[in-house]
Image 1 (cartoon, rainbow, N blue to C red):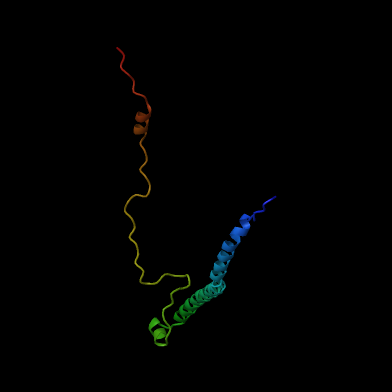
Image 2 (cartoon, rainbow, N blue to C red; image 1 turned 180 degrees about the horizontal axis):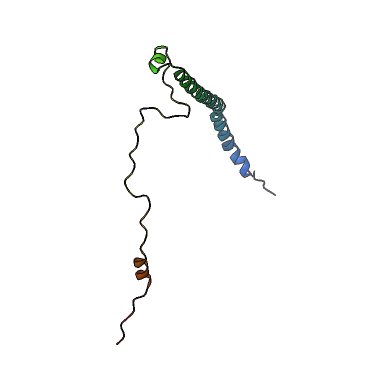
Length: 125
């Protein structure tokens, strides 16, 4: 008589565990697509704001070049821009004092370099 025993493979024993893990993973993954969409929209809006700040700074500088003062622009609701176009620096910039320290090292004298490179002669008796 041959006795048969049910044999279970490793994959059969693991399948409930893998299925449970997959369900948990699917539940967690459900929040990622909306997050990714919002992140993409946020990056796009940040780029739009950056472009607008640059344009606003240029137009604000144009208004000042046309004779409008910062006070007059402020009365109209135009605030100082955070980004200004490149150009001449503002008038109230503090100038740095020139350094009094020498910028180049002093030249070496030939006497020092010769005496350091020649070996000392020993006295003969």
